[in-house]
Length: 217
Image (cartoon, rainbow, N blue to C red):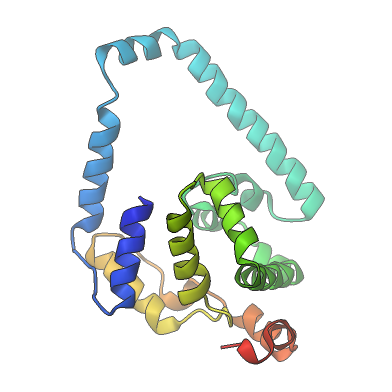
């Protein structure tokens, strides 16, 4: 997945618009077909034989996850909806948390402000410490190839990095329109999906200027 992602990003940076109205559906078909190849008769028989253990493990995971979410919520002051869905991979946490009533940004704006400041410091650290940033990528993403790590770092920590952290409204609008053209049901308006006020506050307070100096762009 990383290879195609880097290739498409490279073409986009060169001005070549990589877009297909059915790319998402085709990708889902390919992934679904690849996963289904593992469902052979012996595998299905093994799953059926271990069904009680699988169900017990699933229930146990939900119980432990719920207890952990409640504990983290009480310790951090973050809404339990956010802490619960924070463990879900794939970037769905924010959407699901909002759907189930999480209002951390509205109820605890100071916490949200500190979180945005931490992201700004993370961006600065990754750019100023490339070796440690790539070591983290290698450890977390299990990427041993040096060239792949360097390419990913150059693309996302150098070429595409947004030091000001301001969400570009036009780019977001284009992304939403592209998603709608591929069949994704996006009901909310672009203005409902972001809030630049926290970044604006960092800029007004001089935090970003102190962090980046003349390099801020």
